[in-house]
Image (cartoon, rainbow, N blue to C red):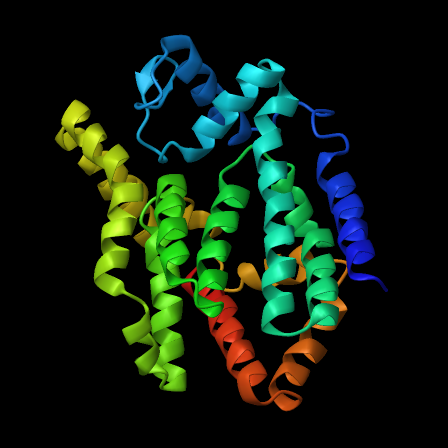
Length: 298
């Protein structure tokens, strides 16, 4: 199949998958209305620095998704479609980025089919049509990790910064932890010399730092205590709903989230270990570390 035709097929299938009926149902509690309301109040108060909800300052998340929704509200009006459109757009951008990155790492066939599986899986479909931060975070964080795999290290730092502006420290902690574990498993420590880490740290802080700095200047210690203390440290170390804590919770989430491709999971994991060699084996090792780390963390 012609390469351009494959890209066109992906765009048609995934565009339809994520855009069709986007505003057809009302925003769903508890999360979607919160993000939409906060973006609405950014416009109402003409204040794009300090998120608010119901006229009170709101330190739950950084501003990236609120900015995107405020932008689409200004273009399409304040409605359910506009609240979800940035998430759908980020979903489409993720699969396009994923296709080209995987094609470069492996081959055209792998890029096409893995992208099709990703973009038509149930959880991707759900999150790509939801007015929440997850798809935006996925785009920037996946972009940062794929940039590392493709030796685009300065771009990696920019994308880590944007991920941090989307959902906080997880935007740098996760990619850094995954890369460190890969070095630990592969012994590829010499790659660190190519990563321009001091320059990368400067780039990262120039992208992610200003909003946090100005929020602290405006709101003081309450921002630090609420955003970093409660919404990051406490919520990552303490269950929000203790009565529903189940150690196996993410196993069915993974299996159901991959539908209708769940049946491919175990065979693909097996073949990725037994049927690969050279750079392909190293890339697949990295990707196994990537998904297993995230799965075990949560």
